Length: 143
Image (cartoon, rainbow, N blue to C red):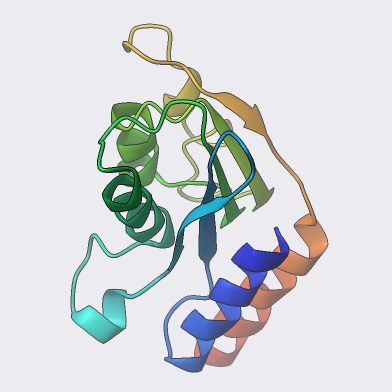
């Protein structure tokens, strides 16, 4: 989660929502890192999770991220949860809950939806306070 928090700080430095993500391989090696880059690239799909998943897939030269773990500072949204399922990521660890748009148990539970072809093990609340304060401070300054 420390690496994901570092990525969130980098997103903050560019004026984007401070969310960071890391994909770890089965051996714990870092395969991909990502941060929100929607503002930098004018791309609505440039969420931290998607950026990290794309980087990991390129490094592995495979779209299936079997045996990997995605660590992210905020509960994934529906789009990111869909990407996680499609990439066959078996585990997601996240920090803060997203009570407005979360798709890992708060608003929706896409990651554990039994009607889909892949299910994800979810570990919420890791370093939750640290992750949440970045977002609270960011949105407090923008409202």
